[in-house]
Length: 165
Length: 192
Image (cartoon, each protein chain N blue to C red):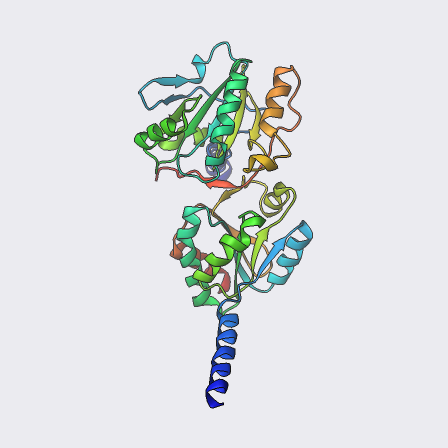
């Protein structure tokens, strides 16, 4: 009997552990209304918004540095927001496994706009959609800097610290 | 003092900065340029004769957003070259060598040349940042369309053939209706 109880306990523990470790939540961005809500939720925080995709090699290379930033500043007024441009059909098969591998334990957003130009122009009218692309917002929700292409940890950190202080 | 010397210098700096970084779009005339093919031949805008338009496609041997278009662009080139349209793929990525481009052309049996844009000069002149990113230039060297090829890298899901639409309108002697479009793609890796 004890053996059965022990097995049940281990089984339950494993379920809890897997739920905790693999809780990658992904949410679609369907319209500019969703972007308004996301922007509103970031007010009062310094936010780094990174556009990426699993198919984008420089994005994948840059990803660990962004996670490092998150770990170093998550206890400050800092938010890291990933928006993937992977197609919705590949969220389960490609994006979620990638997020798990990189221990992302916060919500990741994905592009689900019917017209992708609405998303691109909402973020930046001068942006043609090349990724990786990163925007840093101050606590008032204004963009203070933007980066096109893969950048170094120190470049992002410098901008974040400028806004946090 | 400020008005006489510093202000004009500042204005000149701002204007020159805009000229360098703003890039070009529909309605803008582009300056002549010369690109090299992998076999050493020169391709100049001024040497494009008897063409109704030149399509410049910023291209990459690696970008996963370019690869689904290789077959589509081969077909388009075959279809439209008979109608007087010239297609050039332009590789401005400093990370991709002449040998990479040579292998890429061979692998896809391109119906168009893939040219190297050394030191991303043409990408800088146009302000191109993405692959694939296309510009349609008419016989007066004026950009009439800038943007994506179509609206889905999965050919079976395309609902808007933006480049084809622009070319069809141009060939019909009409003004291009949708002059700019956007989509996601890879960043052009410029030389440091």
